[in-house]
Image (cartoon, rainbow, N blue to C red; front, top):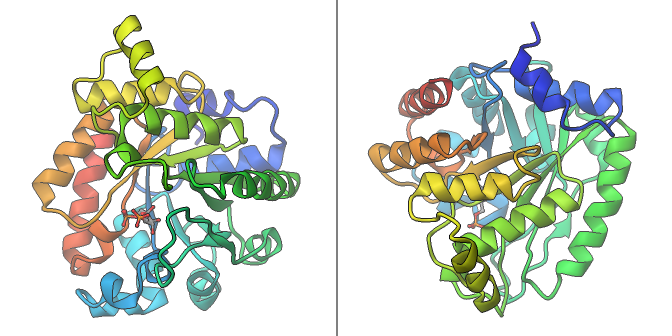
Length: 305
Ligand code: FBP
């Protein structure tokens, strides 16, 4: 049964067609958190993005595409996101079991460029053929290739929406003019979330922000308006506010594998700041299956509280 909160979230997308709203509802109503307005998504594109050994050697069953569908299902995730190959390999076997997000572009680390740009590796047609609820796309604001990515995602988002698919954007600031520290600076992350929202994303995925401020002009604005950015909850609140005042779904990435306590503390901060949830890849599939299910269960309990 559709809940009041999910209805409220859907009301933030009044320009969208019934297909898009139905697919957003699928994401919001599935899994253990279904109906709460919160999401925990399993993303497994790291085989492409970081390489197979860095991704799966620590937990070899994770080399198998079916493993991740089962993990998302066993943990009660709202959705599972992956590139074309992983989804094609097991989408039929798991048809209807868990909402799918097809990543339409991907990047590898075999060529180490300062200004990254992903290649388009799948199409909207592929997403429809595989029964996906949404397309996924990574933009790198700050890269000299950002204009190309913005234009490409504009076209793909238009096509996806015309077929009733939802649009999830991974927005990762990165490029030759941004320092490593700046990639997760609060002003830069809030800016990246805003850009994704302006590009028409329904769901925005960013990294959890630090208290560092990268851009001098932005620092003046934060100081003048005394924007609270001291705690993680403060910073999450600011990123959510920067995403159309909470009218876009903003979720935060898990990052490299860390201990349970560290991850759960961060999730509490995201929850306290009004974040909509987490997208947890390496911290899920790099743990043995049962440990991953247990940890994802704890994360979901925080979001359900
Ligand atoms: P993790 O939880 O493993 O960080 O996954 C989230 C994610 O967005 C993946 O979809 C993607 O492969 C990865 O992070 C990219 O991380 P980075 O660009 O920092 O290498």
